[in-house]
Length: 214
Figure 1 (cartoon, rainbow, N blue to C red):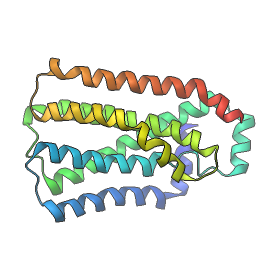
Figure 2 (figure 1 turned 120 degrees about the horizontal axis):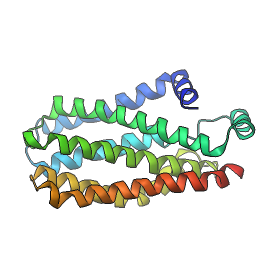
Figure 3 (figure 1 turned 180 degrees about the vertical axis):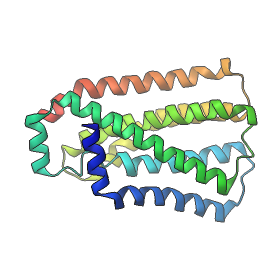
Figure 4 (figure 1 turned 90 degrees about the vertical axis):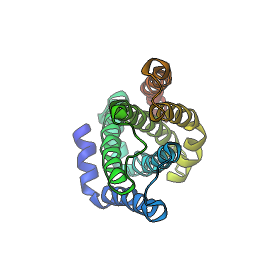
């Protein structure tokens, strides 16, 4: 099923390329506005704003691009739990790839002067966990929104309020990283984000069969 998701994405390469170009263009627009950012809070907030909208563009469409014939085929031939796990894994890998591209372009254009050299491992760890968390939540929201047949707009309507707790934890963790707060005083935020992400994975696995049945 993961290979199937990848093949479906490759058939619509323009969509994936468009999302990557959206991220790059947004970073370049920020570069034209700021050139360099010395303030850590601004650097952190701008990066995560770009990543958040990238996640909505990339993951929010997960279930909306399936044609009715394909949905019926999957309904009769694939276990819903297998399907949702494949979606979660594929969207996680896709989001991690887009995060890596965005971060690289962001550092090239905007710079990384607010990031202390010894803080990069903790920063990258937070980016990884945050990307996985966004991916898991938006995959579930996309599955729910697809049942209303209202398009990707419903994903944004449902997802933006629910994503706020993740944004708060991610911002708090990375703000502390940039301030060089000791790991022991900051790890609580990351652990809470991991627990939240694990809960989303669990809910997706348990609830999706009921959504898929409808």
